[in-house]
Length: 275
Ligand code: PXL
Image (cartoon, rainbow, N blue to C red; front, top):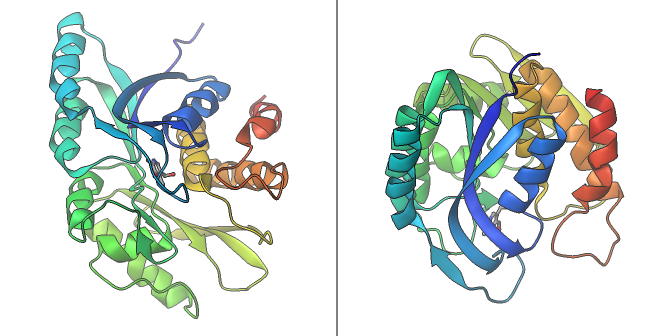
């Protein structure tokens, strides 16, 4: 029997809110991939829509945990990073070096912004720090807002065409990212999708645009993408599956459930698609 793949996700634990680690653990696991977790911080709840939150920075735990893993010979087949803070970028890069199995993949979701704005609590220069994490990544998964900030530009969220996407993706490759999966791309108001680039070719995947947005969909997308890549899917297929799971999760979420998506209800769909 083939050895199972082991992925390490590094992001916060928002105790309530259906985002980051509480999304990554079940969804990566549902892909049949072992999901280890290095919590970068513990928050009472996420920062996107709640009026307040507690925040315990866990940066200080990173080096001792890395040393212990290294001592025990624990290695990972992939690293998937999400919401992290500036002081954590250097320790994360170190862990990705010292605890990598041969050929380990780096999947970076630069979770820091959406809808033209940085998330609460990030300084305006944070994207330039996040760009360092993107530089050595095998896959980066920015939305249009994050892509713009990584490139030091003002976000453009509508009225663009394929030339704009090509130029944006080229800029992201120039940062050092091998593969780019740009989310939230739309050339037709009825459709929303992703542009998947390996540096030579851009391929698109679109789904019908749903009438509402929901918090945490970026984390659902990234988690399924990471799990699917480790299952051996190519980037376009992994991206298309991740987008389908996001749509299923949004459709399964009651209108008045305001702080996240009910991705739990889409797990059977995900498991079926990977069977
Ligand atoms: O879903 C991204 C995310 C992750 N973690 C925390 C957040 C957010 C988005 O707002 O606040 C703590």
